[in-house]
Length: 388
Image 1 (cartoon, helix red, strand yellow):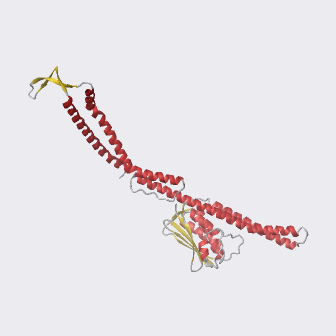
Image 2 (cartoon, one colour; image 1 turned 90 degrees about the vertical axis):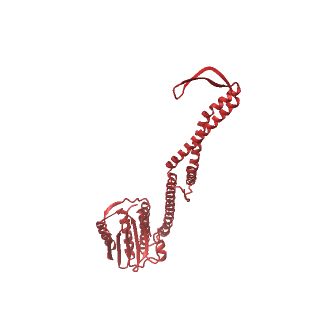
Image 3 (cartoon, rainbow, N blue to C red; image 1 turned 120 degrees about the vertical axis):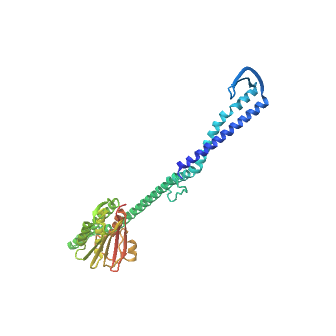
């Protein structure tokens, strides 16, 4: 029952009790007045006639009798006579206050205390608790809404904590991976400083050392660019729009053929009868190109892509006929800077960030990245929600 109807039910109870009490007060004071008059009355005859008519219209006369008191008894009698004028309003006010008190204790006190305690815990950044109130009235709905807010704050704080931890881990890995090329450059610089000044190094050796230093510098440039792109990706927000499936599938197919080059490329589409879907095309294309590029890198001869659209989301599944993921790779391949020892990659500028970028972009789009192995080789599935 809502608070409004519950309060309305309290009103007739309050009115009934008030009238009953007022009636009882009136009867009691009248009885006390009669008792006091009978005990202490001093009746006198006044010289004033009373004229009244009976039911037949016959006039009658009589003397008016009045009670008279003196001193203290007169004061007491006046107090008894006027007591109900004062006591009845006080009784009505008491009934209203008592009804309000009972209503507050039964309907408001407990949920208010629950919400106050929850507010205190939230202010102290303690979010790992539940708010429960058994009544389904407005206060119960408020407690439910408050608990939903607490859950949202808890999830936001947890995501923020994970983002901070991820950023900290990225910075740590960034520092760690920079150390090796910097050490190599420092060694080459010391070598040149030691031998070139005395002419103890041949032009061929000097050219070789300079070429190696140049390769390390190029690698550092690519690495810093990659890290910069990772930092920007974490700040991306998905912007959904209606996209024709047929045109977008053709774009995916053409891009896949160009990325795979001489390797065989297969592409299938399952629209489920839909003609359009809602997505951020830039995010989807970036994930798709990274996945196809990664598959082409490890594939022996063939890369297969499947594009499936469902009511709530869509899938892009990329398979290759390479060695597939190792047991450790299935757990860690989507983490930054991971390189599977089973898949030796000789590219100088590959830093193990491709699948990590895909995972972050999928999560920005409300989806997830799923790693696995097929009968032929590795398989990666990117799932995207059509709206968040």
